[in-house]
Length: 117
Image (cartoon, rainbow, N blue to C red; front, side, top):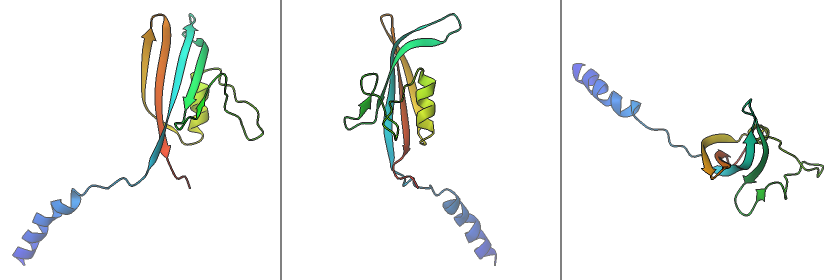
């Protein structure tokens, strides 16, 4: 009896430390903002927003994303673009902010599960 209890206690950590393997495949996209100026209330204006889904699918001011009816979707701010993507289950993974001279450029990397149910 004591041996079986001892064996159980010794084997317990083997089962509790098992890792769960993430079998979900993710797809990524990048949202880049270029330019803009900041007013006294720290609102950003005149920003060009580009959304890169990979595979040559880059949307921006000259090639906007279109809704189901074919109407162009305009994103006046970065938050509008990120909220649009969040409705389709995109999640921000990391963001960086870089100044090139006086030009502000931000990169936001997002991911979502490849197969949505």
